Length: 177
Image (cartoon, rainbow, N blue to C red):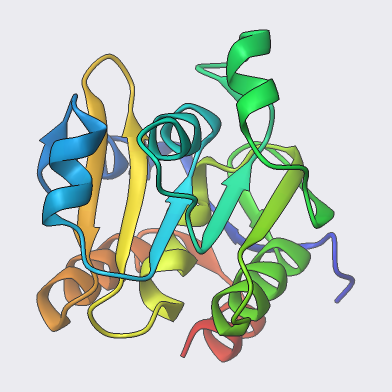
């Protein structure tokens, strides 16, 4: 399996399972940060922008230069720290290289920005599964705000249920378990 192969793919019949937030939704980054435990892992450009703008650079940020399929505004793009690495991941998938980069970034003591050539939306799944206990994963909920997922046994169990709806490879589970 190559690094750009899909470790997980979202089948069309499972899309609805990923539409509802799995944690509280915030429109105020300061309120989210007040409730968040550390480290913070951000999935999405706009989420990362709001956290940085509120004074908190995430320990890990996964970005793709897009929001709701459109390019992010220049102000958003310019506020996000320069990427430390770039990986490819097709829309509706999580590539092996994206999962590996995410797992490595979570383990790294330094803040890491992972840029995705393709789409980063599904990176929230391995982020929650691979994050240390008591971390916080934040992702964007289109049209609503930022979702805060506490990495607890319950949060992981809910994400695992969603992951079970994906078409996954053995490599996906080896990397996140």
